[in-house]
Image 1 (tube, one colour):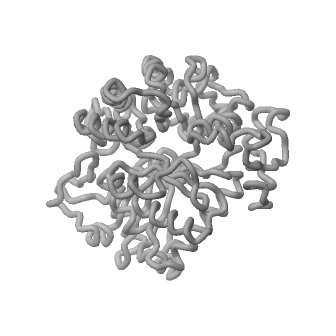
Image 2: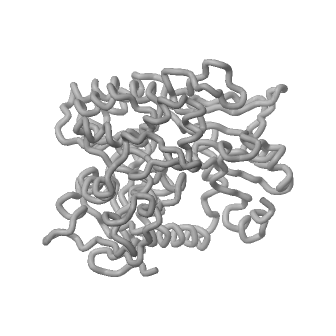
Length: 441
């Protein structure tokens, strides 16, 4: 951890920061606290972000700069974890954490911002992306539209704007079905709960192992507790014909999504909206049936089977743990599906995602839901043809046909002709965007 504390790192944002700690694989099997991070520095603010992106831990100096002390109440949709004296212990959950990420993670200078941007774009190209989907906050729209105006984007990027910012951005020229210098806004994003591996996903059944500080019977919690608020958001989107991407992991959150979206669909009609469930780790079969009726695309996250498959079985049980990311069940029910990496939760390695979707083995080698495997061809379709459909871009992308864009990759092996356990190690040798080589290994 000392390597973070360098003048170069601090110059980027003013904070010492790190990404990707995972309590499920730490020897201590717990979240670090401010006391752990105070060992890094008491002079500079320190923030580390959980692998899920739904939690942060800050040191004492960080809490001071953020103005978080014993007098601060938990925000709606978030928790400040406490010590016995009610003092914050440094762990911030969900909406107690996410609004503060910009403090530590957004660069303080144009030079630093460009450094972050170029590194991110180069990484995406190296993994074979020719279109990327972004679903975050105001700062990203500002930066990406600026990069589009500067003609700096080498791949297409489509943003889904958080519902708190739609009034500012959905009336701009960027809200379009076509790209302007490789950028556009595709619709609105709503987040209904948190991380299943972090145990903030909102469930109808209790977690078998509650998180630190939670009581027996803990089921996670909603990001938007009021159904009436969520109904009004869906009605706003349906009325304006905005595509909606809804982040929901726990089955209680998915129940809320279904019952409130149905109100908007009944009121405004539901033809060819291509609304999307994002993640859906703990989605039930009856909920998949409801999504079929609502014509919702299931964008699932089967990389969980590798990174947290063992952990899911511990916290929700063996039987339910085998049903995370139910790609085969969703396909068999006639749903349209896509798959994603949710970077930076996992590296944006598309071929690793394809391989894990086919193999479905955990870190320990345990098979996580053999009945939910995709074939290699289906997994490839899910990141090409079916993803283009999700983005209303099937006429120009997704398959190699006359009249479509020449967006393609060259791989070192044919994933359709190698053993399933080797697919995740297939390497992108070259990425081609509209006939132009934009990356070579």
